[in-house]
Image (cartoon, rainbow over all chains, first blue to last red; front, side, top):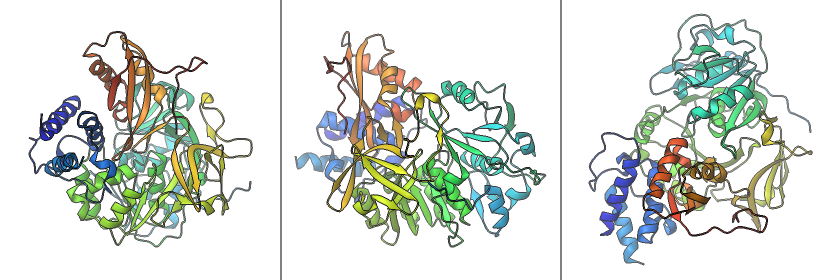
Length: 84
Length: 455
């Protein structure tokens, strides 16, 4: 699976466990906080991705430009994977 | 130690003496003029029935809780302030230990049918609020997570809660808090707004961050408070640009340098401070130099607060501390000299003190305490689990998350998901493990206990 596919399937898994309804489609311009994941859900996502992808781009970022959209989030991981 | 006399007898009395117009409490559904609180009632005029009672305050709506607190303070013997996520199973113990004989609520609270019930709404109607009520010093009981799952019940008074608050603030401040006012950190903001001449914007359960930020912007928020995790969430919202508060406050978790820097660069004109407080010890100090940790010069006596380090952990003595626990098993809240041991491990490096974590293994998930033992007890209900250990796992977004190592009798593929399902049924969402790892063994010390590696 590509990094993007891994991220999307993990998001679906977390959404499935939650109780949110009317979940939006996972498009690049979707605002992450509108994806059906709250901030705890996003934190869980980051932790699980650390286990499956072996990277945590938030770990050494200064958190100066946090990802707002799903596209931003995926790019953050793709860039981090290249610099490993 | 000499206790400073509080300038606030009751919230209501203070509002009467400072009835300047143009002050509001904004919820999602209702807007309440604070001067209307003095002549109207949230409770259909039934406040006099609650005189001298021990009142369980359990509402779904935060603004309804705010109005009830204003009306109950000074007339109830005791207010037991239930946080919004208090599990149904805990109500019997909370009611019994708090000797509750009345309840103020906006929903059907389980196990509370024997109590005198007053419905609360997030609005004010005209009619007698009982202006000539006898005034009494109300006990404020706050709840935090306990080791076994049953909440600790921590007794404050308006005097201890307001001791850190300067009543001489410039008027016209508009306060906002991401932290619920039914927990200590949020309650500080509620009291600062009410007793400092300001207004307050409150969110309601499930309100999206972007909507909350939009309402904060519409009301012109000037003073805004939240945990570092809540501020990280703000910066991930496109609506973060809508607000430009004069003062940004962080508390409830360790504020690391990255979130302080991120806020500084996103809100260059805001004053940014982080406070150290706990429900038991009260507000100990505020740090305003933009750096993580706190100056070593804070150790010792500063004004009414004494700060020390004992066995590596921060200890605090002041009139801001709670008086005692209502529940006997939580033990004494203070030592014989009146110090509260916060359990927060600090390291002194040169002129600066840094927080390293918690001594007793408490996991701080975005400002909410989680005792590993409570989660372990739930995981152990699964028949295939032989033993488990719950630990905190560092996370940039929430500070820490709950992680579990589990030894199972047969490593069937589905077991971790079944364990998660049990946890989701029994625990608030922040206590549900983010990851579950099946391991073959856990380290056992010679005394027969699991080896836990703390900070």
